[in-house]
Image 1 (cartoon, rainbow, N blue to C red):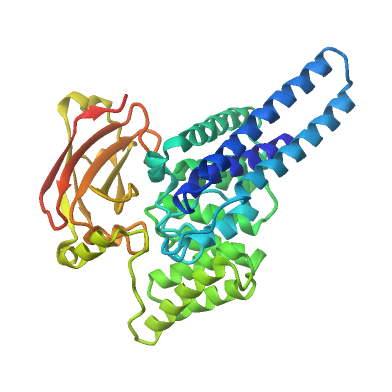
Image 2 (image 1 turned 135 degrees about the horizontal axis):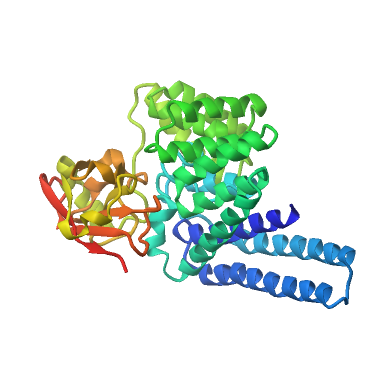
Length: 426
């Protein structure tokens, strides 16, 4: 069982090494990622040597077990140290990113950064790990390592399906990969096998909400309520309950939940400062005042200037079709992602929605309500590329075998756009 926990530690390190580049300053990114990857390689080499010593009779089973425990402890400490050595969150990344960092590291809940994926509408701007994977650049190795670890863990669980801790770790790794339906299923398996755990339930609710179109209503909300019965002070459950209240315009309810989070958080932390800004917005709305609004600092001045002209026509609608030559490769259970990305600017999608491929040909509409980041709205950019992608895995990042089509540049306000899925990703 101890071996599973070192895998968890490595997944946390690699997952954050992959996700954090989009949330922190560029300086030092490569060094931190290299450190996390080096820790994995060192651990593997030392473990092989330890196994070889026992196979050769140099050490006994008891010495082998003690040595393995020491290796795992050291590797976990080193990998966590690697990812904790991060630069401050960029001002202007929005109010939710620090919350994700504050909650996910101690909770080992990696990569939950969409609209309802972290405290207080947490991380719409983190734009789903799977979407950010497309621009991960030198960090793609980390993403591949996480995927490989998840596959190995899933295979191991086929032989040991009653391992609750294993299911919990598999769920968290699926979250890093953006495979939210599979993460939700794995969390459900873990919850049935493990003692009641508020953090596990909060993570389950998050993944389930992601898998049903970023909606906390229904089962996710019920799971969060169960989590708070177990631990009324759980950060993530409180934050997500606040998000749910905010989304249904229950601003007083959002204030109540978020104030509970802030009361137990370090007063000088980035997390507290960001959530305080969210509280101010909720308070303003509760009192009928117009909340302060500003585009993120990461938005170039030219884009900021263009925002007012685009705001009156931010919706893009149309239809997605599949080329006849590819139709046989589409299964009804595949996932269809449709997203818009700025022609010039951040690679993070400005708006995204998911449908079942069985609905093709499918009508779609993208607007600011599909935004993934506060202030990073479709209407704020003069031109975008609209991409339609059919995924076998349910992962929005491009993978070999996925089917894709795109149209661009497209001006916000365009109607009846026709997107033809006409190519397979090699």
